Length: 212
Image (tube, rainbow, N blue to C red; front, top):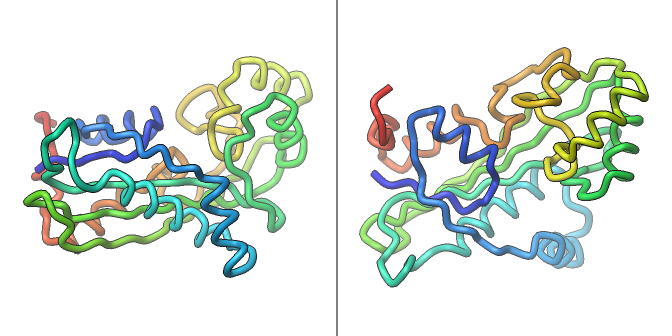
């Protein structure tokens, strides 16, 4: 069974590969800020869970149809993540100044990482059914020093990840506790993805593309 990953996230790709799945990467090119702005103009401010689910669904739906002239035959997965602290929702900071400010605000504290999941059953080259669900994990940060924050921001790693941190790379030593599925914090909850795949009538091991 083929899994199409509607994302260019290196973390999601690495996570799936570590779980035995070599997905077919299909960039979705969704204008995320515009999509969120349009939804909020109609419905008001979106909670973090609703926002990540909206973007996960839009990413998966954006790649339906064909790829290189051939029908997409398998499952399409779209995912999105955001970090919530004090009611504020934070995606990728993109700039050093924002990443630094985020770390100064969150060090020594606990926030919630939300990951959205949307899976489309596209077997046979047509959309048959779709299911989705968000997962959340709480993350507690060490009381890192100003120098540690500066050194971390200088690496560039926190600029392109939700919440300006990782747990599976340079940011790992700055995280003291995770409650919930740890893979949620990396970029997708493998446990949640398995549940959704099974809801579509697909056995998880059929997605494995290498021997474990």
